Image (cartoon, rainbow, N blue to C red):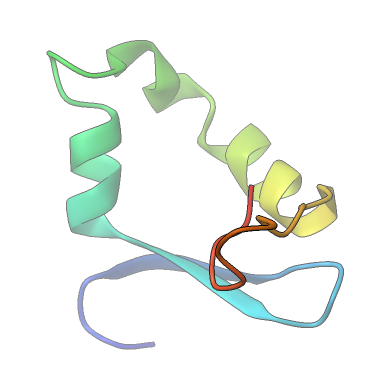
Length: 63
């Protein structure tokens, strides 16, 4: 695993999705969403099994 990566999971389409330590700290920071710190496993499950939708105006963007 590359330096800085907190975890890597494979999504339902076979793509490796990773979260860096820096992004996790941004998400759970005091002015962001500190309540998310207890939901990290739920986040992984959502990334693995969730659906995504391609943006019609920007094909590089997904929701």
